[in-house]
Image 1 (tube, one colour):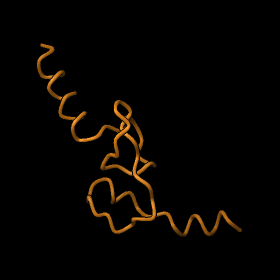
Image 2: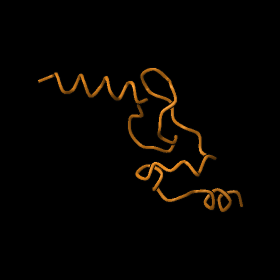
Image 3: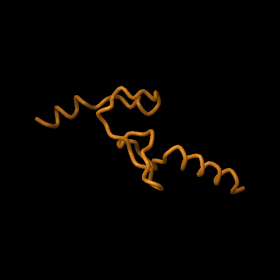
Length: 65
């Protein structure tokens, strides 16, 4: 029965693209580099970085030339 309850709580993946935080029941993921909270839910796939680490990673990638 719990599977049915949990499936009712799941929402569309619109939180990743829309940026709306109305579904506050889901916890946010930690940054994989500094462990600070990110803008992404824990269910986000791939590497999750906080805004500071995302910025630094973009700088590194841009200058790797």
